[in-house]
Length: 325
Image 1 (cartoon, rainbow, N blue to C red):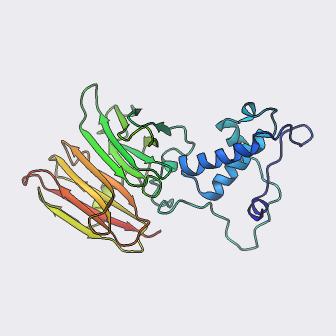
Image 2: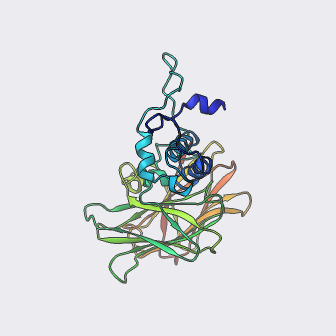
Image 3: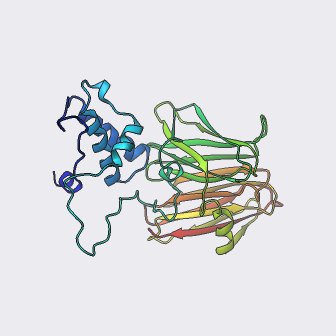
């Protein structure tokens, strides 16, 4: 087990440092790794450390089910040192945890960035919904992320202001919620708001979702990106396509108007007319609630296509920025 030897091991908290009962420790390790890697979006190395911490705690309690640790206990164990890990070579850079493809810290779009401790991550079963409430009137941007374990994602994201006003609706689709998670920013207009994420898929296709107030630089991205990249006007009923650099690992898109309604669809195509991911947005004010999303692009030869569904008198403007990761 070279990887285990390289990472080290955790010291048990028992009186003699020996395990009390190893029953269920292996299951705990495997389950904890899957949860950290695919539900929380952690890297491989970080997920392995998480699973090792969980399994070490399971060895300290007698029984199988009774030994399964909670999240707080795992986090506490992770704060302690690991023994047996080889020292870093002189002058060598500190090892970095592996990041999922297309989700580098500079972009901070992933579900792990939205809720680092996973306290805001909720599992959304098919044909059900979850909500997050936001009441800070000094903040105007909420970050939402949705991912799955590799299954399709059909989600409806709505902004609620008050009991019966929904000024912003976003319908999102991804062929593979692991390779291409749903990642967006929603403006709250500096009001008390509620964000609803509804799973439109069947019961066999649950997904994980999280929503939280965006922090800089993400909070200012809907303003910074249009200011730093050239835009293209898309008249009502028109279509525009943008071929992406094969080296791009992620593309950020902002779609906005001059205050008029925004009714459009943005798609990620791989191959001729083969959409892998799409967002359909409607809002009564495309300036206060611009569409701001990120596409992960693990496949070369991708294209971003935008279609303006509004009448001709309602143009919109698209800004695209590629990231090489």
